[in-house]
Image: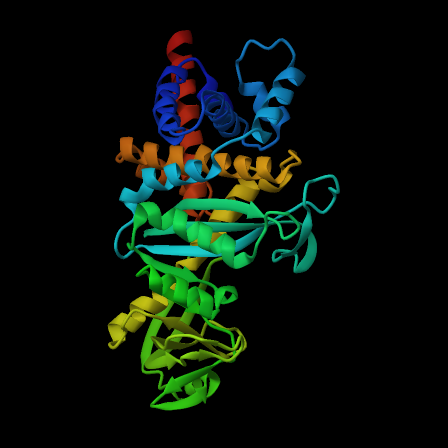
Length: 420
């Protein structure tokens, strides 16, 4: 039995619906009455159908409409109408701000929604599909996830954008919007972890102005100040002694382990940005050099504004970069379990709202509410499911399978008592 059938059963309906009503009411603060209704209906439909197709979502909505097509048209029309999207995202982050701690990792990454066979979608652009290693038509998706430890990660922000849209300014503008949304509720808590695609001086300046701690995987061949001399960063990397050691194991469907050597040194970015010819203030950073991540044996290096003057602090920072894998697993979960790339609404605005509601439907409601209310039951179910399916290593998959297992047991027991 799938989760939709189990949750919709008469035995579980009152309890689940009450929990759901409390949750969605908080996420709809600041929206109009029609928008709050659509949020409630669509999130409920996504949860039960495990799909982003309106034709499947609409089957789980009870609104008195005689024809399914009428309900689909109403949802499609209302998803295109005026919403306060920024308020919706801020409300979501505010509701989760209490779970983000001072030492949590806030991971930022780019993903994509591929629409290779669709040409009527609004503002389609070229994106790079990392899973296939090729360029295709689709939308970029900017995601922000808080990693809480022990396999737990909470998505805070998920928004698509397209360079073809008339309101698009730049990728930096999209990043700034995400940072502003998250920091408005979280403040300066956590350490922001960025992949190598975000290695630029603008990002360092923007985050430093906000007092945020940052770890960025570097790739640019820039000039830095080291030991009072201007030198190529690659020259500095080769000169840093690697005195530390750490073993990192990655959990997930593709389990990997890394034996890593690392070291760090203090550097500064020059006061002038040679690439743009603009005068900027000198920035004092730490350069963390790692050998073991790259399968070719090359050095990987990072910039951070967190002082890492001891081996233990450097080791903790190297482990923190491994938290970046969590956001990849989150996106993979959305694509596989909710068919995120199978979205059929055609406007970019509606697609963005559906992705946000999909994030609310499972990752926020089931995981957080179920885990908090049933702390003793959930670990037992997760361990049972792990024995039944040894490949389900990713915590979110185990949560979902455990909830399906619990719902199936509940329905089976009720049937047994009634018939026995």
